[in-house]
Image (cartoon, rainbow, N blue to C red; front, side, top):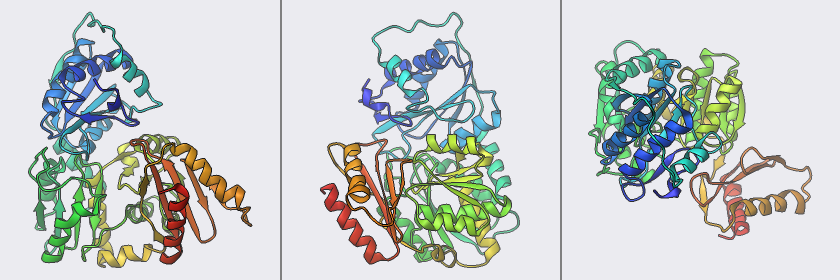
Amino acid sequence: MNPSIFKAYDIRGRSPEDLDASDALRIGKAIGVRFAPKRVVVGHDMRGTSPMLEDALVEGLRSQGADVVRIGLCSTPMFNYAIAEADGAYDLGVMVTASHNPAHDNGMKITLGDNLPVGMGSGMESLRDLALADMPMPDAAKRGGETEDPGVLERYVEAMWDLSGLSGDFEGWRISIDAGNGMDGHVLPRLARKLKHADIRELYWPLDGNFPNHEANPLKIETLEDLIADVKKSGAAFGVAFDGDGDRVGFVDENGTPIPGDILTALFAQEIVKDKPGGLVLYDLRSSWSVREAVEEAGGTAKMCKVGHANIKRQMREEGAVFAGELSMHFYFQELKGCESGDLAMLLLIRLLQREKKSLSQIWKPLLRYAHSGEINFKVADPKAKIEEIAAHYVEAQHAAPLPEVSRIDGVRIEFDDWWFNLRASNTEPLLRLNLEAKTPEDMMRHKEELAALIGA
């Protein structure tokens, strides 16, 4: 077992090279020893190694006395919903998936019975140490049982539809949806039936863990090329692209223009705050000034938060947030115990368009008030030291008057009157990540070049 598979938020690596059946068996045993769950729900994605890893994982869990409920093929939102609807009946869940990673990867997302994920700082370190230790983990006195629950998909679709508040006939609607051969291709056929008489254009819905058409990652503009072309050709109202396990979703408007993740956060937040006046919305600190402005204009309360689903889900729970969004196109809903659903996000966008009777570009472009760089990655020897060096340059060495506003929520975010930047070390890769925004494109480019020079790129 390769120690590097244990990440900040999940387990992920090449499979079977770094994660094979014997590794999954040992991880299952380690989960049993570390968390002592009595009842565990397990699901898996469409990757070629997923059934093998799941079988071994289940064997490890049962050997430690855990009763396992298998829900079969599922998206990550389906998996999270299975835990949420059980309302404490599961002590823990494991989803076998590598999310949007390439076909040769696989992994596991581990979630406690309260829908909070296991990551570094919440059990992953001790789980890793147990799994890697050269010591036996004897079987429990009584072996756990195994059952199946094949009905989660139907219940999940019904729940998302009910939460969306949609109804009526959708004749005349045309929507292009790209599942990227990922797990939303398992959900969409049932969900699309709810949109009666709509013209749903199906791009790459068949499940295929080899991702033969393109990487299932809507953050990368190149993966949206076929969706953009189809929207333009067909005259669709908008296009949707899901990632490999369905917990991230991207959108393009009727002109085929991709909508940034932070602007989508602002859109969905405004829609949700209409139903929950004064509600708290969390947005990650890479996001545009537009998000706070849009939330407050809709009558909500906006608050910056750290990057990463483990951080956001915990903060949502602690502070009672009604919604949260990330630049990376994760959207979190209070009704789902703070978990993501790209499907619900899509349905809410339909509801918004249905009510406003405007094109999507007319709705989102007024929120694009500033020039944002997008996320830029740099390889540096010591990301944390470089962050401190840059922070000192802007705060101490320049003696700016007035002094800029400095946030240490995640790395450093420094705000001036007319621009801001955030530098943070990646939680998943040895990289330094830069986001910045200014009031004009010219200023954004100037500051971007200035920071790249300081970083040494």
